[in-house]
Image (cartoon, helix red, strand yellow):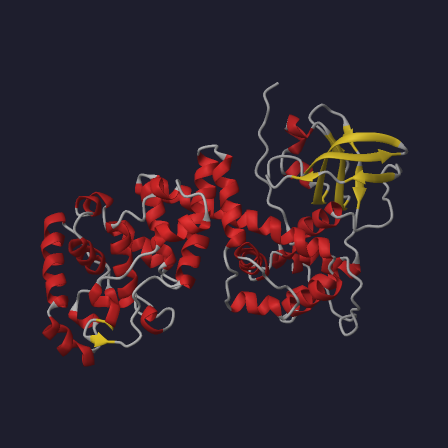
Length: 464
């Protein structure tokens, strides 16, 4: 008999509630099936995020004292079994139990065998805690709970998992760049360029790199002046109207701006280049780092000195070697200027230690990890973890926020974990996937002031 493929199931808010409760065994009392069998859950199994297969694999439970090992489906209504064609899919024939919020029908699998159905409710105490998480004070309450009630094991182990998760996410981004730009060397250069965007201009930096063919850059790699003209010109920063009016006169009199612009216009005509809109760049950093001009000068010098070479970086074995490779000075003109025509007493000769640290954290470490995964060379993955643990901890709004709740970062690995926590869990309200969120749900913190809250039907939709 031909297998009928199940449609991809859409997990409703109520279904997600039930799955979370099942996963963490939050129902203290053992359940009972609709046909009177006592259920004792020994192991809730492994959750499967796919929508076309049973929800939990390798579940261990007892039905009337008899041990069963198999798969479990957790869904809002028993009738969802038929709505999603699970009754016709052999992949569901080894389901030993269907956990449902509403036992509105009996269940039969594709082999004609009955499947035990167990009704289950979400505990009101758990639902009320989720309601708190959904409120404006939700993050504050949860983060305070981390400080007061989370075990040391959770506080240490969860950030470790987040750190690896962040590297996995960065690996996918680097793989995408390698495919889009045609090589891992190009992907590394783009990844370095993004770090000079300081977050606010990261995507624009990638757009800039995409607009400038690597073949053109490589052809002029031995001429620093042409590289700087290409980099600044393609960024749209060699247009007079991108210079503040009070600096335009001096910029024209100095001559360097005009020389760069003329060189770029010649190269742009030769290679049919279309520059970005230079007015898109947002202020970033402090002092001279607020404008992107110095960043492109550093990038041009790095490229000229072959410091953006992935092949060369892979040969580095220690943090000292990595930092020595990345150290570079700006072109002499930019050592005393923040903008065309604007002299500065605080000009920067070399990349600061802080900027070097950020390049290692956000470019070198992810590239080592991604390349190691892609080439199946674990030594590079291990090196990535070693480097990030000796990198100085970042200081930003996220790390300062967590510091007030007793979470102090001693290394860049820990700060990267906090960034992942805040960006991918707290801000996106992924509380059901978060270990800190789980600790709050099962915690002992009192709920005075929240007892009379009404539980909305779609509460969990925003939290999963």
